[in-house]
Each structure stands twice: as structure tokens, then as C-alpha cells.
Length: 361
Ligand SMILES: [Zn+2]
Image 1 (cartoon, rainbow, N blue to C red):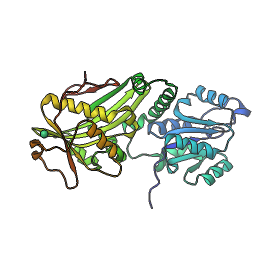
Image 2: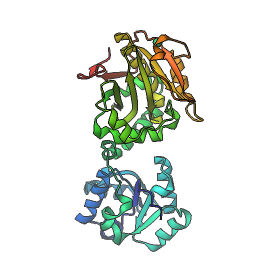
Image 3: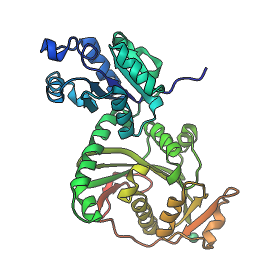
Image 4: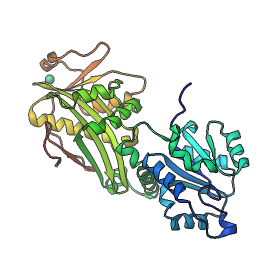
């Protein structure tokens, strides 16, 4: 039997599900401690939560705020439309497959309506609420630092998107208004799970199409001639989390980029280009040449463009004799020159080989 996918978002009914009683009839409704613990527990595991309730929005949301629970919900559809519509819209907004969505409601008719229109969504009865934390589909095997703040990241993304829609001006000015920071750090063991997720998910932005396993990356963490770098970003709306990974083999004459992957979430911020520019500047300071393993896949053309734009080419150089690239993989080369830091974000990074992070200026 194949295991059911982990639930990424649970949509809660309110009356007689999240809280006891019916807001319109009972006025003061309360939430059991056990149910509150489930909301907090799912949040800590990185399972997002939303609301679909038949009520008037304002009083229902006000009650969630009074109860101290409003902040846990990334979306709320408190209206009189079909609940299957609410669940579908929430999934679309989060860009989640319906197979990763769940719905909990005390009303059999509501569960039947959702199950009929969205057969992939898992439906739960209200009396199952207390036991959700014990169920395997609500228990991700690992909970990374980014999973723990996933809700915060989605909420920040929503505010950022609103700001973008309201913003009237050039793209560069918009980026500057975000006050973005990029942090490049040497990967620690606890970063590896999210880094591995990144290399698996970012096929468009993965320069080699090679997926490094947790074990493969782990074995390189302490290695003298390798650097495993994690790139994370944040702006004034909140964290983006880990958005990129670079694996560099440092040979005496040349730094060989064996893996470079960035999240498609930050392509519009120019993250890949800025990362390459920082690497170019850092290599130029030490006098090393740069080489990059590149294997064209159906989906990573955008990465080739980024390399070419950064000046990498299919040139010959004596430094390339220091290693052999695998069959079917190209090697792009650059003799680096000093680069100006970007004007659209601040970049903080350690000198390669260790040390505290300093701002690239
Ligand atoms: Zn060279």
C-alpha cells in the first residue's frame, strides 16, 4: 500500500468543529484546550491551516482574534458559498495539490459536498480533531527550520504580493522597497534536509539536474576542498527561508561549481544572478578561475541564461585540466573579475573557507 501524502493544509469549519457551539446562536463560543493544542501542534509541524465557515466574516474573524487563534490561519473563507469552492480556492492560492489538502467539519452534508466535488481532499469528522496529531498523514518525517516558520513565510508572501500590486514604479524600485537581504552561509548538518528538498524541487533552476542526497552532501560538509553554501533571503515582510544551494569543489587554480540551485520563488528578485556575481567577485579576490558543471535538461534553460549572462562560456583554459566532468555534462568557464555589489539587495557572506559573515560592499 502506498503511503498517503502528508497533509500540507487543513481547512477547518468553525461552528461545532474548531469551537463548541454556534456563533450566531450561542454568542460566546469557546475552544477546547485539546483542540487548541492541535492547532498549535500542526502549526509547529509546518502544516498550514485555513478556515471555511458559514458565518458572517466580521464577527467570526473577531472571535478568532479574541481567542488568540486568528494568526494561525493563512486563509479564511467565511461566507455562504459551497465549501468545496473554498477548499479549492485555498489550494490554488497556496499552489498545493488537492491530494495534500484536508478538510474537517462536523456536518456530514458539508463533508459529502467537498468529497463529491474534490475527491482527492481528505475529509475528517469534528470528533477526530483531537487525534489529528497522532495520524501519520499529519506527521511529516522531518520538520525543518523552514517548515516551522512556513505559515509566517506564506503570510509574508501574501503581504508582499499585495504590496507589489499597489506599487506603482519601476521593478528595481519595487525590489529596493522590499529591503531584501541575502544571507550566504556555510551549510550545517541541520540545513541539509531543506537543501536536499531544494535540489529536488528546483528542476528549472538546477544547473546540473543532479540531485544530491542528504548523505552525499553530509559527507562533504567538513571536507577541506569543498564548500556547501546555503542561501536564505528575508525582506521587510518576513523570511523567504532557504532559497538556494551551491556546492563548490575548490581546486588550487579553479573553483568548480558542481551544484547551483535556486528556488523559483526568488527568480523575480534576481537571486541566481546576484549569487553568481558574488561568487565571481569572491573568486576574483583570491585569483581562482571559475568552472561550472552544466547539463542541459528540458527545464533548466533559465539557469544556462544566468551563467551566460554572468560571463561564463565554453572557452578552453588550462585550469580545466584539473578535473574531468561526467559524460553528457558541459563545463562552462569564467576568468573572474571584481564585481560591484547589487543595488537591489544587501548580501552578507563569510569569506570562503570560514569566518564571520560580512556585508558585501
Ligand atoms: Zn581557467
